[in-house]
Length: 104
Image 1: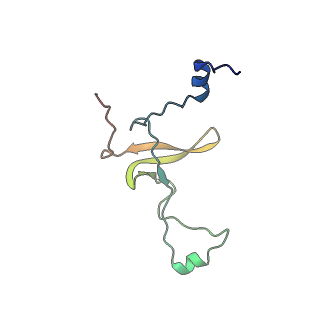
Image 2: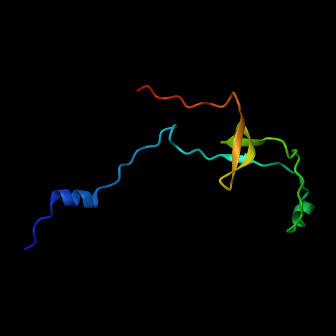
Image 3: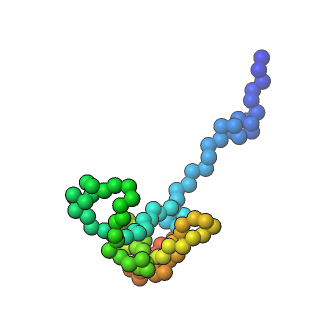
């Protein structure tokens, strides 16, 4: 006859991970960095090929828009960090809502 499993073993073996809800401070927020804007006619877009150059409306020195939930939150410039493309924030817009800590 098999012995009853040790309750400590079965708890460890079948324990569920702790599930916690992310708070506004810890939840990842998707951001978009808009590199530039361009206008093209439908004809130009239909004829686009590899190697074509699309001129942007912005200058090369213009900071890029950082957008969250279709709302402009900051401006940034492209930089390289550890061999990877990154964005250095140059301006945080005043109307950007800040998360407040809960006091409960």
